[in-house]
Image (cartoon, rainbow, N blue to C red; front, side, top):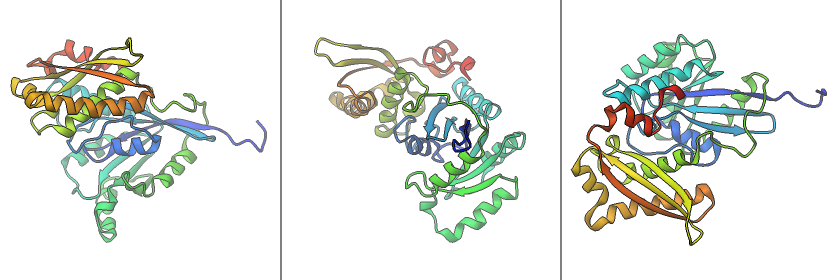
Length: 303
């Protein structure tokens, strides 16, 4: 390598934090496209999402982990083990907190896990656009009194404030290494998974509070039809008859709206015309059925 040619840096960075602090919003901003679903409901992310940020000098592979919380069922246990396992696989960790939420037991639990991490841990204070700047020093001090962080970054993932500075610091401190993925690849998840997540996002955005954590989406098949459209067939799984009624809506109105919004995002993702067909199915105990969780993609061996 000539002196004029700079070394290429690459590595893996985990994003951890309590539910709903903006991890998915940050990841989508960094890669410039939706790879993780967003909702104002907590615990939106269930699988680790790898988002890939590539420049001429570096490649950062971000792992957006499920929000760490006390497990209530087998699905929660899967999400928890997925989040904590990420800490042992990476070159750096971003501990993301929300500027408008007080430090709580969940944050203390995460910090206890992070104290065992040998790689650099950065404190990322997200949603600074929601608080007065004068409030930030005291807020940050709470966390710094619990742990020494490599650096603190106040950011707004929604507005983009200080995100470039955070990326520059990561680029500078990652080890020299290969480019793991092609320039234009932004996630390592198969299309079936991303499509199912886009459908689930619309359900989270449109339905009432009793539905979100009781819903899963399984994409059955994707194939081109006679009209040269990509036909996507997917099943929405809920736990109770009442939830099925909410998702279908009066005269099928809600299901149609879910399908319309999801189809537009899927077409944008795939760059193709899409015909989306949705069904709703009841499975009372799917969140505690290990076989079902595996079929839906929540496989421990992958994490």
